[in-house]
Length: 413
Ligand code: CTP
Image 1: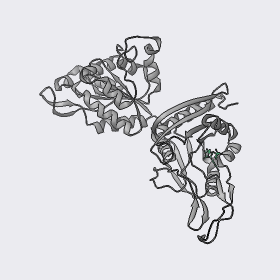
Image 2 (image 1 turned 180 degrees about the vertical axis):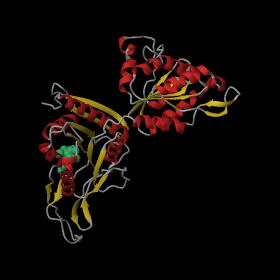
Image 3 (image 1 turned 90 degrees about the vertical axis):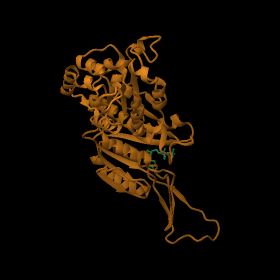
Image 4 (image 1 turned 45 degrees about the horizontal axis):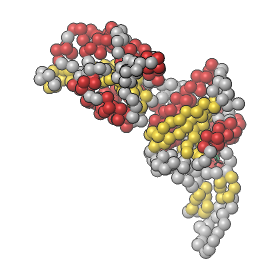
């Protein structure tokens, strides 16, 4: 999920730094756009450091010193890539531009060019707020579907008291989240997600397991819910709280996971296999606890490959996404899995990298899909929260859905 945060020139511009941070904590990517006046109050560097993205400060590219064709059309690219536009603080000048269709800087141009929902949080002197021109502009914007987070009343920086103070950060963030949720691009889809590890029994007290925490699968379930899907979560044993999905199925072994997934396949329009499924099971688990009498040998046999089984039986309109945990030849192995398991998309984890992936809040992945020419399309997602990665996975899924609807090919040949 990505939001554009427009910061315009008022004393409250410093509060936008905290708003930026609050949005990021929720896994939302923030693209900051500052008007010229805003830069008089806060330096772009503050927002660049917080958001990890370059700050847009002019109509002709970030620095605007060497305008080129890419930067000249950047507002269109940004307009198409965002899920919402939030302007906080919004000055009387910005409201006037938005209401009257002026487009003489990046922010006002973006406002005209985007179809994403828009939220504005005005802040200004009380007389400016109460001025008939400002109120008329607000009415126009409201009538066009712009959400206004009304300013609070109180002591203002200009020394006056009354309405005009930027609303509380929490109220602004809540409105922005609501606007982001307004994009229900998984509405009508039933998403079946597997998460966590599976465990294979050695004896009544011991098992063969792996380090999966379930966080990636749970983040996917949460993101799918937020985007309007009906979610079925088939989860191996994990220690984290599940999101409020419509159906939660707890399993332990690979065979149980296979059974529960297969039983629900017909209902699912999107299947995401994020579980770290045990690749081996114990051939003859002991009925009694094994005694420590010396060395023992466990005979392992491969489990059934659930993803490959779904790949073989899946219907044309179903979208199947697999995960691949790799430690070497990462892309090559993942492409092989994508093809062999008949997936529409594969999310590759390089599990040899420390601090990400298994048992971590964060992840860095590569998403591989097929393009219309049947070649691999590779999208690298730099280290980010699993919530952010989950949304990027669904962005790719939504893209595949649109192409399937148009009848375009999606597979690697
Ligand atoms: N998977 C599965 N059933 C298995 C093993 C794996 O459904 N018995 C799924 C995983 O959920 C994941 C994908 O297959 O979506 C790839 O898992 P991974 O462990 O990377 O690959 P494997 O197919 O097990 O191949 P290998 O371990 O040999 O790399």
